[in-house]
Image (cartoon, rainbow, N blue to C red):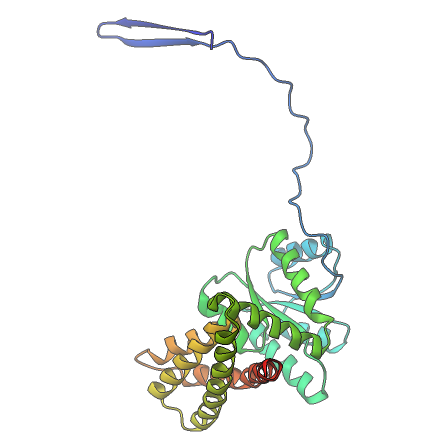
Length: 295
């Protein structure tokens, strides 16, 4: 490198080392704002309601969503959030889970009740929490939410979420079902190495298993017994893992964990099990369609 090194040492005093290197001085980097991480430009523009009692968290999320081209309203607790939602015009709710007055789980249940009573199509509800534990996502889904994000959330994560929502919020029931069929088919073909006969066999077996599991679950709910619930949900979990149904995988794991505790939280287990019972018919219907298509 064309440099040199010199060493001077004195007994009892120590050693000094001098290193000389001829280096080129580069021009200074121009000052300016930090670069903004690249985000996907294909996300849709949605009407988003942000609900969070922490003003700084709420303000940051609002700014992030507005930067991504979303129309945002906000509320400081679940009761205020529910009132905003009742005014209409909300595509997506992003809500903190733990808030005073009414928490995010309570608000999600209230929204789902209103939708059911009025015959409204379900809006998307996303939990937003600092508690990054697997069971937290299961709690969110069991209370009626679609998914859960963990604080803090990056622009790229929000952008990816919006892209995914854009593919589902505007889809007709037929389009949504076809998407499920495509996803399940892709998953099973990957597992079977593309063997059509094995794929058809797995579809038929999954369909008959879920029909049986749903009947057993409906029968078990009124007469709760923790070990029987654990065994049944463990069996269901095997099926949803085969199809990679992420929401139900989380719920099943949560129930298995709860049922294995010395003191079982029957209320939470029942709530989660009822969610599974409400979701299985849609999966069974998709699998039935697939059986007909392959016949």
